[in-house]
Image 1 (spheres, helix red, strand yellow):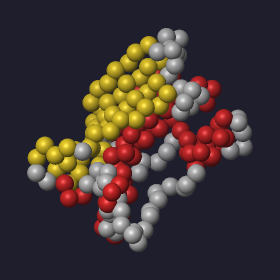
Image 2 (cartoon, helix red, strand yellow):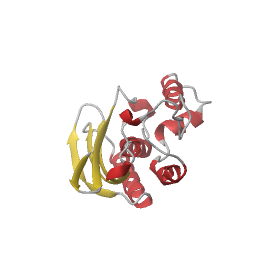
Image 3 (cartoon, helix red, strand yellow):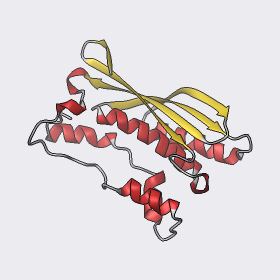
Image 4 (cartoon, one colour):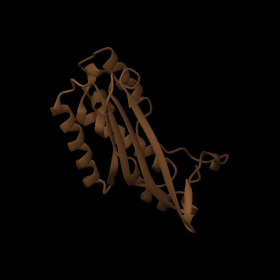
Length: 177
């Protein structure tokens, strides 16, 4: 977080997804990869109390990657930028032995609304916007190729955007961490 002017903080975060570590190529959904990559990085801005405003994407892929997959990836990024009013600010593409996506997200927050992990106090409530363990269950379902667990696969590739709920929470609860 940095404060270039009084009362306004800017948040910068990046999040990488690497084939073999975060997903397997056999699971690949290019649309889902775009969505998962962008929303995971944007959720880090939300965790600090901010609203995502723009993003940069770097994508590395093998030379034999089908053009259709790359088009699906960029179309999903475009759709997400329109749906959530995010500014696509640039990025890079490069040839790589494995698929690698790195997303940088910039967001802002009123200076007094910055949330840090150190703000928690004894007696505070913990609020969760999703289901605990869902990503691990999705990973296991995909890794073990269990076709009957499609809902977990959908959660893996299509996580929900978290920041739209933040204003309602701020109106209802004191958020300190």
